[in-house]
Image 1 (tube, one colour):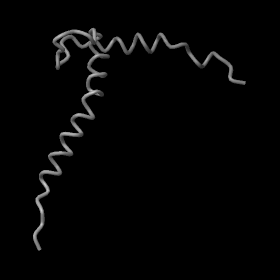
Image 2 (cartoon, helix red, strand yellow):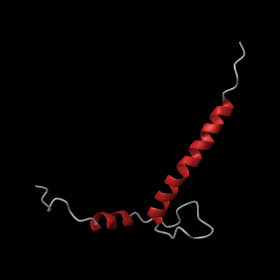
Image 3 (cartoon, helix red, strand yellow):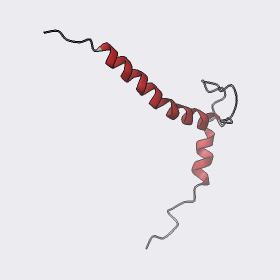
Image 4 (tube, one colour):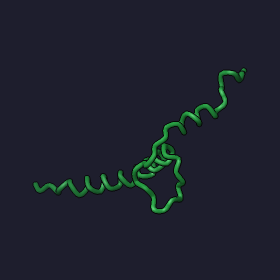
Length: 70
């Protein structure tokens, strides 16, 4: 019995998964760096990562513990 090679299917799956994961990488990279998303040419690696944007966003959300849900 002659089996067909599986590497073309795996190659297609790897390419498709890469294309599907690029937007998630782009969102995380942009949120860490805070750079303008319309910069041209875009940088692929975060140049000056600042995780403090997450801290600022955390403290900007109003606390839900003080609001009543009754």
